[in-house]
Length: 315
Image 1 (tube, rainbow, N blue to C red):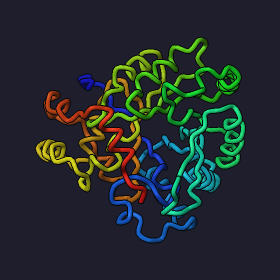
Image 2: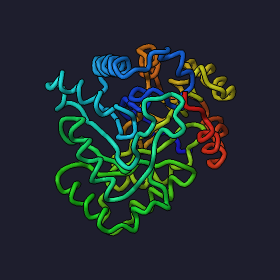
Image 3: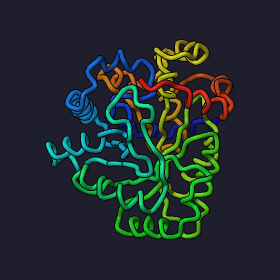
């Protein structure tokens, strides 16, 4: 785990829409947070309310994806209702996964991954239509070292064209080899990529060295899953982290987010709040005063962490 730099400004907080744009997701306590009504209208209204609350509290970075159900459409309709806000916002979205859950909680499969030129050419126009214009940042969703993207010259050229048009092109990463995927993206000849969104939290900090390299190269570095899909919240299942947070005088979610915001390479830390009370608690995050060795001791083996994540139920 990387140590915070004394005196450095904390990373900006952004709002991620992964848990708001579709009826089922893998976050803890979702039924209690959202209730029984997961219809399109109910989630659109909730997304708009959360975007309003985030705007009112100074959040200016919003993250979506093609696979987050109707997240892009919900965000786009909110932007259309508040066109004067667009210039102050940084909008990030992602392609390479598609939502296939049919708006069902019990869908057998909720999303499908495909890193191909054909998928990009289908999804980019859909993103433009949903958002009412281009996002500021557009990421390959969940890049891994074995992605066919690395050998697809036509796709890489298309991404270079998009970057030349003024959209910041990047990657998001997932899995125990996040660092390897990010390093491979950075090392591509004439790489189109200058942004990354990676999982980093107190349980899974293994990508820190590669994120440092991306930061040093001038990349935009965005942290996702800083509360480990709810494990690092008061409703989670991490007694060791909970004890450290209590000693530090913070709720566990704020403690975990504060640790991520303190990393010297982080530009933005995403939160996935779906209620205003969660938003308020998340925004109270501050840098932990906990000894760095105690924080490091919370880290799990990446393979074990990602196995547990893959086993989480969609609810």
